[in-house]
Length: 356
Ligand SMILES: [Fe+2]
Ligand SMILES: [Fe+2]
Image (cartoon, rainbow, N blue to C red):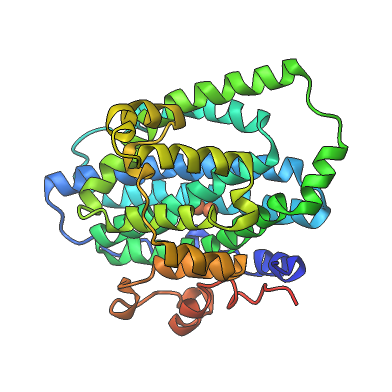
């Protein structure tokens, strides 16, 4: 488990400011098409970062201890900073102002349903959403987008965002372990169960969210990924990390993991998958790409034996394979940290937050 005192200390000491970065550097020359795409990507990224912020605000609201509350409150601050950084990047690359940019309509439609749903689902489910969302965002979208933009300003911002995300992902896995634990489940069983009305309300909100989830994912995630990750490598890597997390015995027992794994099994069953693939994809609100088995039995076996921190570290390491960091100077001098130090901050073990 993560050492929460050390984590909180890191949350306090590793804050940074948008103004710490040198925004005067000139962007590399972009074609008209590239500029329009990149500015739109960063515009939508700001919206996604704010969704992550809303989820952490929910985690903060329901935190069971003051230390967790403070950690999640700092993550809310981080995500708002990421949203502003994304807006600044959109501005930075909007050199020719070819058009007016606005948040994707599908993202705007999804947002209120998403906020309603996270307020009404259990903290365990809210944590599952943020864990999945951050894996997709960090391992797949941001990394691929940064490679695609291939420019110093974007690299500088992403390096700082990644520093924050290493803490977030470590906590996402920590909370996944906590919610799946026998101790937490016993605690939930001892509490009065929600009324039928509350359950009906939660189902209604979740159903509405799933309905809007698919177009949202297509517009702000899968369509950009087709451009910035045409081979689908990073997308598969992120989905694989989620699937491996649900291979952990305690996690696999939980209803959401059982449901998702059940749908995935059906989707991968000959005939059933061919006939009902679209229906299954609609039921879980996720495109078919998410419902393919991406790991071998050997990898699942290995994941089962690993600790949550090791799994979180491996997920974080996955996004750095072939990263730009080896060949592009990282401008972190203003933050009083060397490039070498930035590189060591990428795993939760190296974050120094592993419990005894
Ligand atoms: Fe973020
Ligand atoms: Fe995050």
